[in-house]
Length: 137
Ligand code: T46
Image 1 (cartoon, rainbow, N blue to C red):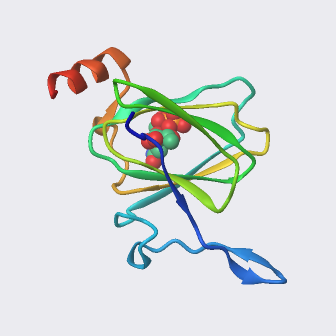
Image 2 (image 1 turned 135 degrees about the vertical axis):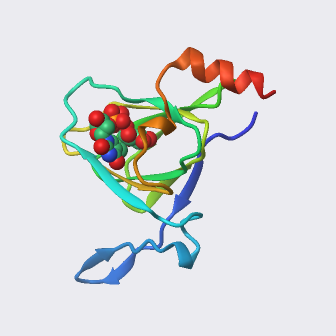
């Protein structure tokens, strides 16, 4: 079974005053040039976010506070992971359906993106996503 979930562990810097994680494309932890950064917070109880795939966007998602559960789906299998550490991220390649569930009240989900925002890059219909994926096989 192919592993859909690529985790990246970030090296915490800092000292006895506290911690810091620095993410730079040129230092190797991020496999693309970062063109956009956004964060999700204050997600209401029971809400499922995501529910789409991207045609070409690559992203890294890091739960910098609290936790949430990611479900990734390549059209053939689904896998899930609990993100609950500010030093662990997941790398989400293009054409992967994603859903985010079980946000803790305090969850802040930071996302690094390879492209600026483009609604045309979204596939928000699961059946359409499956049709595209399976046509390419
Ligand atoms: C993803 C997951 C992890 C913008 O105007 N600019 C932006 O950069 C983004 C990300 C969103 N928006 C607008 C589009 C919608 O009107 O903000 C609204 C909420 O976006 P969306 O419903 O797509 O949010 P989520 O939480 O379902 O998904 C987001 C990202 O959109 C998506 O790329 O992979 O987080």
